[in-house]
Image (cartoon, rainbow, N blue to C red; front, side, top):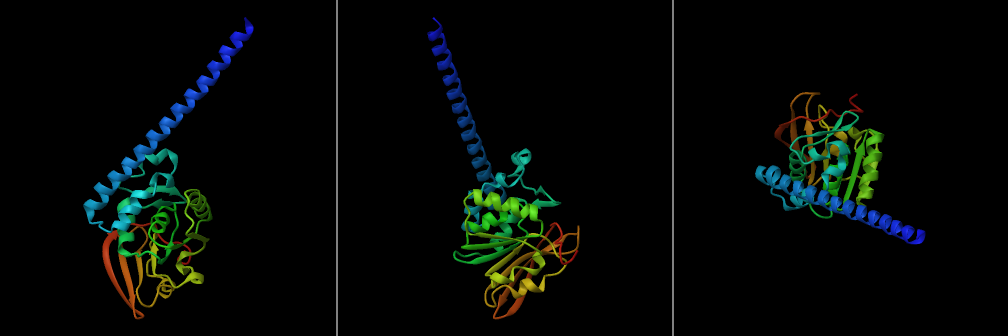
Amino acid sequence: MRKPLVFILLIFIIFTIFLSIVIYEHDKIDEIDDYIEKRQNMVVSQLKSRDIVDSKVLQAMLTVPRHKFVDEHIRESAYNDYPLSIGEGQTISQPYIVALMTQLLELKEGEKVLEIGTGSGYQAAVLAEIVEEVYTVEIYESLSKRSERLLIDLGYQNIKFKVGDGYRGWEEHAPYDAIIVTCAPDHVPPSLLQQIKDDGGRIVIPVGGIWMVQTLMKIEKTEGKIKSKGIIGVRFVPMIGHSR
């Protein structure tokens, strides 16, 4: 009688393991569906309703899994309309600001973009969905390495990373079609002006004092001449490094 009992016990164990796997996979699918729905709601309620009209930007924001770029305990808030902490006193910008700054760059397929302030890596991922090459500089090594691992795991192969002082840009790969700055200096760094193309280069950057309302600026270079325009008031973490 012992053999049938052992056989029944073995069948029960196998069935229990199989059932656990099925439940786990079902929960994973539910979680994926939930985040897809949150992302769709974000695009409709936060972006399309506030004049984000560039189809490339909207598609990128719909594609990139923003919840992957924040700690697990705050993932439920990832698609809400406010910034979130990512460590080192830094934040991931609210979705609308990410979309607005990306739209202001007027990106085209095949372009090369420099990002100052890798942070969580989310903005770099959005850029990488649109352009051919993204170069990103982060002063905090811990953030840079974490973002690099995540973006590689997510399959991005067109992003290059550097730990360094963003005030100085990344001269080695200049000139860039566009530069986006995700931290606020109190003036536009001359090195960044020098590293965009003389004809058609663009910069989107928040400019202003520490913990003050800053101005989001769009800068364009045409035939070597600079033209700048204030867009809206914003609040970004300060640029550190050269200015520290």
